[in-house]
Length: 415
Image (cartoon, helix red, strand yellow):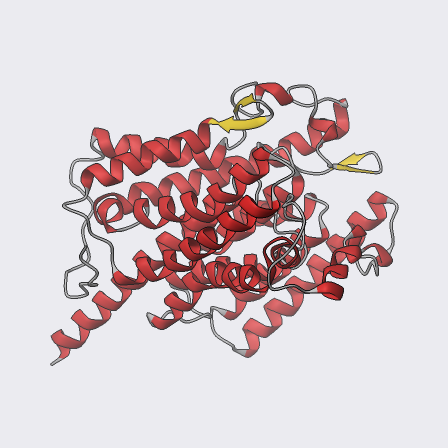
C-alpha cells in the first residue's frame, strides 16, 4: 500500500462542463446524508437509516475511482487509533458482555466504519475532481437543516404538533413519538430539525459550523445558523455557539476592531440566552447547574478506576470520556481520546493554524469544538454525529494538503 503524500501535484481544477453522473450522485448522496440523517426503518429496535446506507454507496464510488490501493500516510495515522480502539474493545465486550446488541453495533460503527468512510470518501480520490460539488452539497444541506429547523421549532410551539414524513424526516418506527426524544423543556420543545433531537442536531451542526461559515456568503443565513444553535435550548450547544463565535472572530486577526465586534457579539448572544431562559421560566442557575443537568453522577467512575473494566458494556453516557473509562478502562480511555484528537493533531502537523480563515483551519476548529463539548454531551453513538465528524476530518486533511501544495508552488514561482 502506498503511503506517501504527494505535495508537488497542482491543485486540481473542477471538471469542465458541469457535474458528471458520478459527480451528481456524490452531491446528492452527501446532501441527503446530512439533510435527512434519521429517515429509515428499525429492525429489532436497531435504526437502519438511509443516510448511513448512502455512506456505503459513497464509499463504493470512492473505491471504484481509486487507482490501486492508496492511502496517504496521514490518513493511515488518523485511522490507526480507531483500529487500536476497536481491537481493544472487542475482547472487552466479549469478556464482559453488553447490555444491548444495538449499542454494540452503533459503537463499533462509530469507532471503525465511520472513520474509514470519512477518510476514504473525503480524500483526493473524490475531492480532486468534485470538491466544489461536495462543498455545495454541505452548504445547501446546512442551509436546509437550519431553515427547516427554525420553521419546525415555531410550527410546534404554535400548533402543538410536528411535521413528520416517515422514511425521510423521521424513522418510520418513531413516527408519532417525537415528544419522547428528550426534547421537552417544560412544555417548550427544542429545535430538532430533521435530527429528531436538539442535542444531536446542535452537536452535529457545531462540527460543521466553522466550515459552513467559510462557505456561506449570505449574512442572514449565518445569523440563522446561530439562531438555530441557541433554539436547541441545550446548554452544551450554547457553549459550542460561543466557541464558534469566538473562533470565527479571532480567525480574522486579533485587532482592536475584531475584539470590539467579538465583545458585542458575546453581549448579544448573552442577551439571547437570558431571553431564552426567561422564555423557559428559568434563571441563570439553569446554565450553572451544579448537578450538570443530571450528569454529575457520571464522575463516580473516578472512584474506582480500572485498567481492565468489569461489568457489561452499556451505552456511552453524555460525558463520553467518563463512559470510555468506565466501560473500557484506562487503555480504552487513552485510545478513545487519541482517536478523537489524532485528526486535529495531524492537521496542525500539516501546518494548519487554529486561527485562520482557511478551510483547513475551519475543519480543525470544528473537530476541536466537538472534543470540548464532548465533556458535556458528546452524543457519540447517535446518528449522525460521528459520520459528520469524520466527513469534516477527511475534508480538513484534503484542504491542508492543497494549502501546502499552493504554498510550495508560490515559493517555487518566487525563486
